Each structure stands twice: as structure tokens, then as C-alpha cells.
Image 1 (cartoon, rainbow, N blue to C red):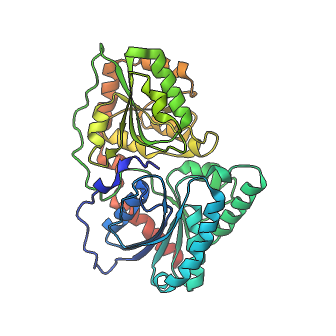
Image 2 (image 1 turned 180 degrees about the horizontal axis):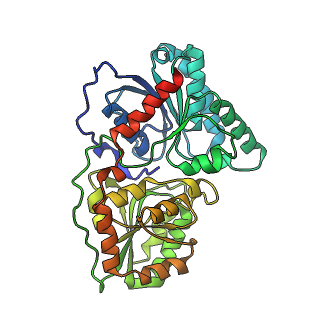
Image 3 (image 1 turned 135 degrees about the vertical axis):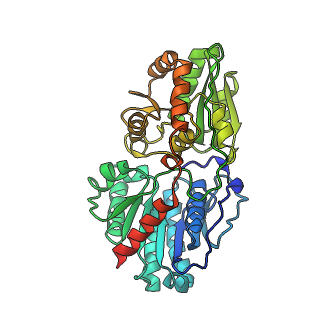
Length: 402
């Protein structure tokens, strides 16, 4: 999920009348109220006209001043990667939900966004006697702790299997999660649907570029890394390529750095004149400008290679393609397969600096421009989630619950 933007800049297009007869009461359980995908999802659901309330954690990542513009109940503060503290916070949150049983009884649909929140949502529904409300498990990522072979991983998978048998719908952002994890590992055979990590439904997007331009052949090629900046292998790869290509390449990094994942980030790039860190950008207002300043973008996540990183489809491929900027990814991953099959850019076989350098040296500027223009010529809904994509899943959930 790309926590890379000034979240207070996110706006919605005109929202339908919230008093319409078919509006539903949606209770959304979220892991961080200030996380960008959380904000996008809730605002998109509100854009359908539904009455949305959330129960959320808050993590000490960034955007601590953000306050939701929808009805929200704060549960507790939690931390990244600290599974012991997260377990304690989950237990405390279940107890806290005892005071919100009436709210749960009024729910038409309950959506839990990640495994921690699914535990809380399932327990809260049971404590409130709200079994009439279908429970949706929206899986954003497959936590690496679920993919191990040790006792902790087996216990977590068993807990998830228990809950999967009690949800009415599994929602994923990539078929790779179902094909590689939920069906073969968890044995899930229930109903599932996809909400891809496209630009948000209902968001007031800036004007989409109409023409694509790239840098002149006698200037540095502009390679970007945009979004959540937390992947140490990507940083090492891109830094190596920038050092070896020197003045022929300029690496531009846009987003918010996760300090816990990339300690010493600023020092690592400070000594290189052809690497520039631009910091956060306004979302979605800054998208067109960010990608207009790039010829190509590195879109592959390498953070959890072998599982989650190989299975996901990141938001950045949709943002870049919407703006007409071709992507580069690994051919053997779900991201790379989408990039290759949909002609969203180019792929390399491995995360090898020699292969990336060979690709960058081989590509001509006019070829890059043509690929980018072809992306701009595609319809918006290829990269922007439509309200129908959201409402169709909600309708399916209601039908499954009958």
C-alpha cells in the first residue's frame, strides 16, 4: 500500500445523496486511519452514497496530524512488525468493542482490512449478536509472518483459516493472492472478489495528460521510484544502477520513506548527484506532475520476495499508467506479468543491475514515448476504479448473505 502522499489533499468528486433508500450502513475496521489506502477506500465507499463508519488503529508512521472527515472510532495505537504488541492491542480492542455493540447491530456490512482487524471485527460481530451483517475480509497484503514454516506461522495460518470459514466474502487486490496463497495454502474455497489497487473511485483527479513527452536523447534518462519507499533491495538495486550509469541516468525518488525499513536512507543517497529525493507529493493532485518528470518508473516491490512481493499488484502501476509513464518490473512476478501482458512497460528476468542497465541502454527515447502515449490513449477505467467495481462487490456480498 502506498503511504506516499499528503493525505489531506485527497478529495472526492461530488458525493451522491447520502439519504438514498438503498444506502447501506458499512462498518470498516482499518489498521491505520491515516494510511492512504485506508482513506481512499472509505472515501470511495462514501462516494457510493453509503453511510460509512470506521473503527481504526493508528500507527506511528506518518501523517499523524490527519483527522478523518467521516465518523470514526479510535481503537488503539499499534506498531509495524511488533507482533506481540499488536496481539495485545487486538485483545484490548475486542474488549473495547463491548461498548459499541449497538453500533454493530445496526451494520448492514462489516469490512475488515487485514488479519488483525478481521479478528476484532469477527469478535465484535459475535459479541453484539450481529450475525445478520455479512463479514468481508479485505486482504491488502500477505504478511510475511504467515508464510513461514515455524510454530508462529502455523498458529497464525490456523487462526486465519478459522476466520476464513466464517466470512461471507474474501476481497483481494490481486488474483496472485488467491492463486498462490488462499487456495493452495489455506484451502479457501469460498466466495472471493477483486478490488484492484487502481486510483480511487470517486476521487477528484487532476486533468489527465493528453500527450506524452520524454527527455531528449542527449540528456539523462529519468528513472523514478514512486510511492511507498520502504524496499531495501529496490534501493540497493537502483542506487547501484545510478552509480554505474553516472550522468546518463538520473534517479528521482518521490514518496514517504519508512524509516524503520530504510534506516540511513538520506545518508545513502546524499553523496550521489544523480539521485534526488523529492519527498511526499500531494495525492492525487501531484500525480501528473510527478510522472511528467519521469521517463520510466521502477514498479517492482522486492521487500518480501518469494511471497507477498511476488503476488501483489501495487497501486503505482495504475498511477504511472494513468499518467502515461511506462513501468519496469520483474517478469516472474504478478506485477511483471501484468506489465508485460497489458503492455504497461517492460520487464527484466531478475533483480540484477546488469539486466536493468542493459534494458535502459537498449530503449530508445522515441520507443519510450510511444509506449507512454499508448497508455494515455487507453480509457480511464483501465487505471481508475469505477463506482460499479465497488458496488458490484457490495451487491455480491449482500446476495451471499441471503
